[in-house]
Image (tube, rainbow, N blue to C red; front, side, top):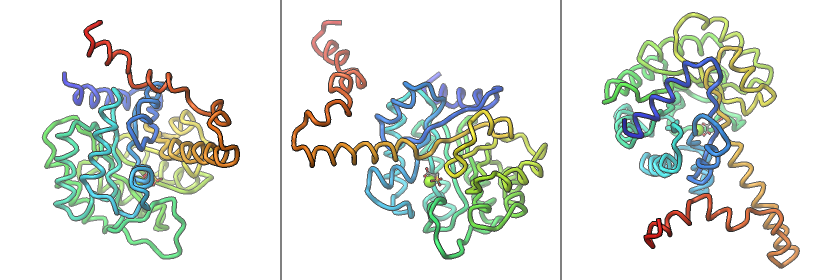
Length: 296
Ligand code: SPV
Ligand code: MG
């Protein structure tokens, strides 16, 4: 079994297990390898993370399919965990979405997630004033059907993301969209929400109970008090901590820069940062040199 097959098989079997599958968002390869080292089950390639951390751009469909895919491929190479790549709204038209599936699948990525935001998208956590349009339900279902037909393997995993609750269209709209997307062939369903109490999500879950066996996915950024186990007990199988590593990196880097600026010497930050030897170890430097020098 090649590594793409092994990762896809692992993701599907984790999602059938009797415990939550927990993914953490990465914006680069090192973050992915740290996520693996810390015992998580999968890596989420965050569109927000890649836009922000790799390109210094807002999460508004400014990065292209090629840029997003190359970030996902670098991340995938750095971990043996399955990678779930955020593909925003599929980077454009139905044909763009079909190409997205082909490219990510052929590149060995285990899973992708595609949302029903219109182009240009808004990040779901952004509190804008204007009413957000979503791709009409039947049109998004048609796009998903075409995308799934384009798939060449059986295990590549397609998560359809429903933005009804984020955009204020309510639980009925979320339910109708979820049912259509699953009928169109989605393998998993992410119903995104910013409701801290989970009341809307609970309404959705109650209506959804028994409708379809597809794994449900939660991104609990805005209901952060719920643990992965609690979300699993409510009915979610995959929990994605989407942006905590990116925010940790911005926070830690800002602190170190402030200290360096104030103190003017490197020793002032030494106790706050990872020793260089540990960095060498994280990318197996000794092993590579021993191989080069023929000492192994
Ligand atoms: C991301 O990490 O890019 C996501 C999750 O799509 S969210 O930012 O909550 O929309
Ligand atoms: Mg995103």
